Length: 266
Image 1 (cartoon, rainbow, N blue to C red):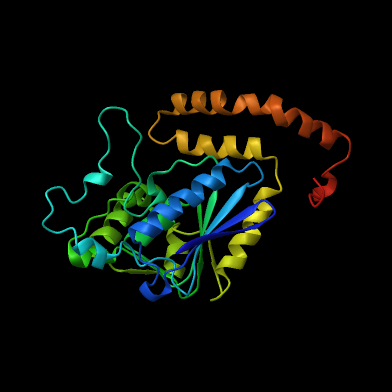
Image 2: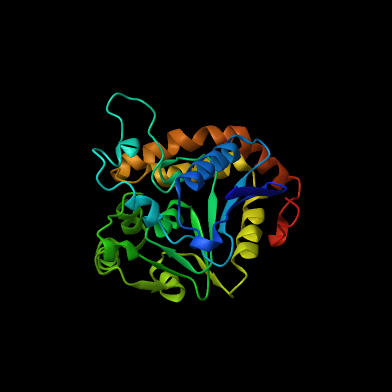
């Protein structure tokens, strides 16, 4: 089995383990990752997930050895086409890249997260990179386009021009640069990405989750909307949580919780 999960309280760590292939994505792994994240999303006791590649590599992209076997087929990518009849959207070549989860996922990035692996990291809500880790559209060298959301998510993170430069050159993007341009949120020492991501996940999991998920959802809903439409969408999405969780939280504060910046016991 190339994918397994480990749980620690409200944190679920999804581990991709094909170290001999630098965690390049084969069909078995892609299907297993989709199943793992679907189970996480359904689990009422799970709040935040971490995605980690075992063996020193986050993911070297789509397994091109496997992809090469599709050459000459009449419709080699037919299984990935978006439906035109309202049918369920199939998984992407990289697995969960088309999933819209209700809960946050943090990428713990060691070594290469390149080509489709870069896209998989971009699918996550947050990215923590080790100092020697790196991104890059390395598939540029082989004429393989980004088909797992890279051309959509990267510009939203780093801006139009910067994204085009990274995509068209296919160059290496080291962790320090990724942090500088907003492609990751934290850089840690080598060997510490998983622990740092799990610590962040545990911190996020401490908060009232209905409100947190509503705010997360509002951030994604506002993409492409005019200001007034985005404000309306935020209100309609989040206002119900004020009654469901926020008023009770206000009562806890009124009773003395969280005073003087002490949020350890909330």
